[in-house]
Amino acid sequence: VTKNSARVDFADLEQVVIKLFEYRGVPSEDAEIVARHLVRADARGVHSHGVLRLNFYLAKLDSGTLNPATVLTPKQETPLLKRYTANNGIGQVVATQAMGIAIAAAADNGIGIVLVSESNHFGIAQLHTLLAAEAGFIGITLSNASPAFAPTGGITKLIGNNPWSVAVPSEGPFPIIIDMANTVVARGKVLTALEEGRAIPEGWALDKTGKPTTDPAAALQGTMLPLGGHKGYAIAVAIELLTGALSDGGSFDQVVYPGVPDRISNVSHLFIAIDPAMLGPFGYPERVSSVIKRIKEVECSPGVAEIYLPGEQEARREAESRKNGVLLPPRILDVVSKQAQHASIELPW
Ligand SMILES: NC(=O)c1ccc[n+]([C@@H]2O[C@H](COP(=O)([O-])OP(=O)(O)OC[C@H]3O[C@@H](n4cnc5c(N)ncnc54)[C@H](O)[C@@H]3O)[C@@H](O)[C@H]2O)c1
Image (cartoon, rainbow, N blue to C red; front, side, top):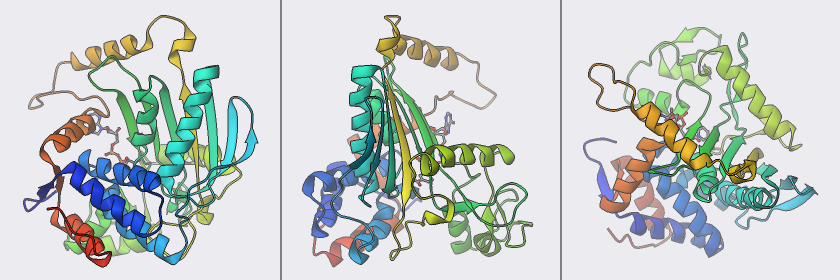
């Protein structure tokens, strides 16, 4: 977010994005889901995965590599454990449906586990687990993604940054949500450094020969580095085994970056919902609130005003965005304007 950023009303932005998807034949109900997810990503401050992604998704709809109609077809179903193909549907809609199925199974049985293959980029993982937490369930989601880095010691880009999220319900004032991918930083930050003519810090990426680099152009030809060295690599392998392999879906380079308009993405996900109330009447949300309280009571380092819980800053930013408008940098507003112009949609701002 730069000093030229502008605030756009949440509902106005949502309506424009809905129309952009409807224009491509996406059913209104699904257009509403994907629009809400993209706008909420910006509202929560995750601009890399907000309306900026319209360019990717709409290009894929135009080239026929993203199915406007999202339908989950069962491959295997037991009361607790279910596996579906998403038939190349829209990732955010797939995830909303799949987490809904996991929650329904958890309401009956205490836990629901849903695997999905042949899906697409599902945006920010936290909104899927939040769906569970808002309904009083623990939500867990994992997804594979296109190759981002090499296995530790290797040169070839093979492992996805494989995002994951855990959300738990609390008594308030916000659910705790952990949500991250497994590279030190997103590749988008290297692209920004290249555009701005800046070097990148050592430790972000390797060049194509496997040597550390601070040159963003060399980094883009090479690979990103996993979070925490071999640990990020190991976590990403675990996620690959629990998504692509366990859903019998695409893995590694069978998963294609969503910015490639003419190829199917072939992403796999896992969704888990757990009903803590089934573990007895001890009051899990109260326990979570006491975790929040204990952490908040820790003495701050010099110069630090407040300790945050994971998900807290995102929740605060969303509340602020809903009240005062979503703060968007000019280049993202430009993406929305150009797309709206192309579809002859009038901007309300
Ligand atoms: N769909 C995909 O294929 C895909 C791929 C990569 C990333 N993503 C999404 O990109 C987003 C960004 O990922 P990221 O790895 O850059 O996340 P991040 O580094 O911004 O945040 C990671 C976690 O740390 C928490 N956090 C951050 N600062 C904190 C602080 N000061 N105190 C307490 N907690 C704090 C956040 O709440 C979050 O849970 C995520 O939403 C992720 O799902 C999606």
